[in-house]
Structure formats: C-alpha cells, structure tokens
Image 1 (cartoon, rainbow, N blue to C red):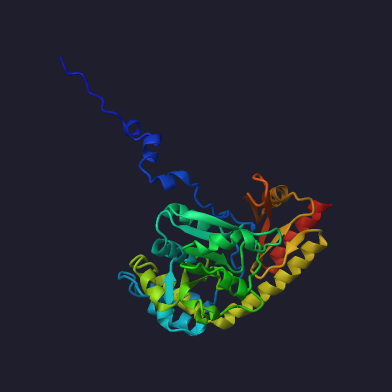
Image 2 (cartoon, one colour):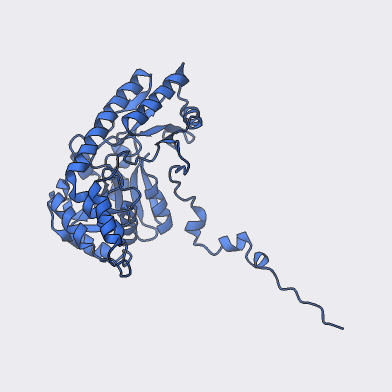
Length: 379
C-alpha cells in the first residue's frame, strides 16, 4: 500500500498579498506612487497631454545614434559623460565640473533627495505643482511642506515663511507646472532654505520669453542652489531620457557619489551631446512653439476660457462652465488627449479642489484640431 501523498502549501498560500505587503518599508506601503500621463500606443491620437516637443530632434541626433550603435556597445559607457558635460558647460558658461548628467532630470531629483535628506527631515515645494517631489519624499521617509499658491499662482508669504526656513530641500519648478507661470529672481532668493538647498527645476527653462542661463548660480546663494534641466522638452528627446544638474562643483562632487555607476547609456549620451550642440535647431523649434502658444492662449480666451499666461510649452486653462473633467472626456472621445488635473486641499476648506486642463503646445495642425473640437463642443 502506497504512502499518502503529502501536499506542500502552494506558493500562493505562502505568499498572500497581505504578507507580501508587509515586506515593504512602511513608507512604500503607505504611498500611492506617481501617475504619469497617458501614452496611447495606437495611431490617430492628437497628443497634447505630456508636454513633449511636437517637432523632431536635430538631424545630428540620428547621425550620432547611428555612429554610437556601430561602435562598441559591448563596453560600458563613460561613467562621467565627459562629452556632454563639456558641451553643456560651454552653453551655461561654467566648467565641466559644474555638470552632472542623469537618466532624465527625474534621476537628478532622486539623487538630490538621496544626497541631502534624511528620513524624518523636511522638503518643501509649491502646491499645486509637480507632485513627483512629494512622491520622492515619501520614498525617502521625509516630511513634506506644501507651500500654498493663491488662485493667481502666487506665493502666500505669511504662510510659507517658517516652512521654507526649516527645509533641507526646497523644490521650485520655474516655470511652474501645471500653471506655466515663472517667478522672479527676488522670489527665488527668498525661497532658499536657511540651512538647505534651493532646487530650481527648469524642465521648461528654454521656453520663457527671456530664458535663464544659470545666472543665479553666480549670485550670493549660488553655493546652495542646484539647477536641473531635461532634454525631453526643448530638445525633443523625451524618448531618450537624459537630463542634467548644474551646481557648484562641491555639490556636484557629493551628488556624484550617489548616482548609479553608469547612469547614462552610450546611445543617450551620443544623442544628448549632439542635440545640445545644435542650438540653432532647438531655437528654431522654440520659436514655433512660442508662436503657437500665443495663438492658443488668445483662441482659448475667445472661447471663454480662463487662461493663465504661460512661460512654458503648455497652457493651463479652465473652461467657462468649470467642467474640466467632462471636457477632457469629450475630447478624449475624439482622440484628442489633454491633461485633466485636480489638486485637493487648495483653499481654506478641507475639500476644496483646484482643477483645470493643461494643454501641451503641439503643431499648428494639432492645435487647429483641438480648437475645432472645442468650438463643436461649445455649439
């Protein structure tokens, strides 16, 4: 007579979801995570939701990628990314030691958080703005101070004063997202923490009427400031994932200890270096985007929208009926994607929301399709 078969517990029995969750750090269990914009994979969409550049990158980018692909992909890339650092340094009027390349500017934000903020310490950022700052703080186990913005997207100085002073990092997107407004140099200097770092997130730094070239780094607060940039927007390289930080070499040297060993791959290094060297191409596309931005703002106002004047490659607006969510769905049904955004806790009432539509600047043809759809929906 054969012995009874012993059935071991299945993997699903041993690793129930509740048990798995308990393996994570409490901060990770508690967080929701950052939700990127929609990226449809099928053709036919008018995509105005994630602030990509509607125009292709410099032709030199393709040439550089092909040359890099024909090279030695079997060896690791340059860990210090010398070619790009030298090109970016020349553009910003600094030495190469002031530049830290990254896998998109989001990696630079992660490096900053890991370099300067201990668990339990505080970061600050304007609210509403780029909520990834808050996500990175949650991962780090840091506290978050939201610096409330008025309905006109201005700082409430009386409320923010003590919070700024106590922060290890104050993140200021300039121009701001989703509003597109830009703050003055005087405001930025006031926002520098007493014993921390001011991070100027200039993801849209090439789109203001008068762009910065890191001039504030040479001011009195320059040694406690880090500027982050990306090649996703003005250089049309969102698919490459490449960004960089500009800061005093003492800060860069410390941050370099925290980055991944080879955080930028050979193809992205080649593409980014070629792109940043071709300023004529970038500036030509920038001119087209700014002209379309002006036309879009005026057309939206004529349709009754409230429009915040933008210094970025997008426009923040609210429709005349305050029905942003419904309008987003109606446009999506027509295969036109814009970004519907809502931010809770934006006023004295706990349940007060600020919501609206952030519309990326597309080609003139794409903007015409959007405006025609808005006119049809309004009729």
